[in-house]
Length: 255
Ligand SMILES: Nc1nc2c(ncn2[C@@H]2O[C@H](COP(=O)(O)OP(=O)(O)OP(=O)(O)O)[C@@H](O)[C@H]2O)c(=O)[nH]1
Ligand SMILES: [Mg+2]
Image (cartoon, rainbow, N blue to C red; front, side, top):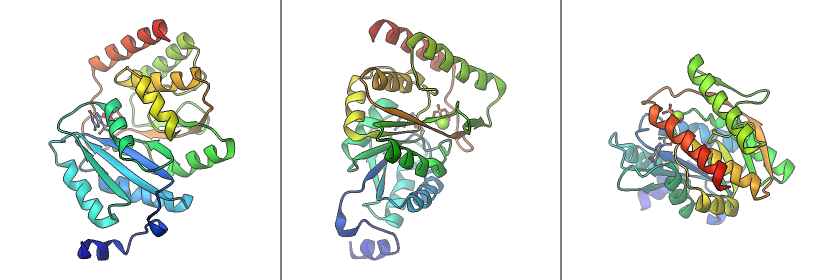
């Protein structure tokens, strides 16, 4: 412990061991190549925002050893800055957020992907937007001025845009990016939304934000540029499309 304490001195800690204001929950499945650079970029962004934070990684027994890479980060940044929640197998994103929340100490929760598609440079904008507006949810959007996607082919761009337009039209959603996952939530709001949400895959993000709107939470948006993953494999397949349509139909009849 003495060694660990000494190693941590180089890294900022919250004074007096108080809880951080922001918890950034990052679910991981086979993201070994991404977690270190992501953490360094998050640290830079949160220093710029001048707020206290922790990162909670939720790893589902990634075969590539992601959890060991996170343990290295805990040694470098300290156990107050980085937490690791491990689960015995790939149990899905929705429950990963819940598991992360159970171990998160912050009043504000930021959800982001590990694959650098959600660039940490946008974090200060999420925080500033929430503080300026008093919003319960700040959602990153690719579909407002200043936002966009990089690295996707035309088919994937049209699919994402089409899915968003279709879902907005059918569900009367006011948020411009329903399927994005880069968001900031008031802690208790997220807990309630997660408990109510049943969809999986891209429909999960849509259900969460539509439920937020229907339950009267204040939602604001910030433009983000989504960058296609550089390392690791994309999991987008036919199954994802089927799940999205199923989720959309269920929301249509169920909400
Ligand atoms: N803990 C956990 N994390 C997951 C699971 N599925 C995906 N993730 C992570 O959730 C985030 C989003 O998943 P991605 O695979 O990047 O999904 P995507 O961005 O829609 O698609 P691609 O980047 O094209 O693969 C990433 O950080 C993944 O590592 C899971 O079952 N459990
Ligand atoms: Mg991704």
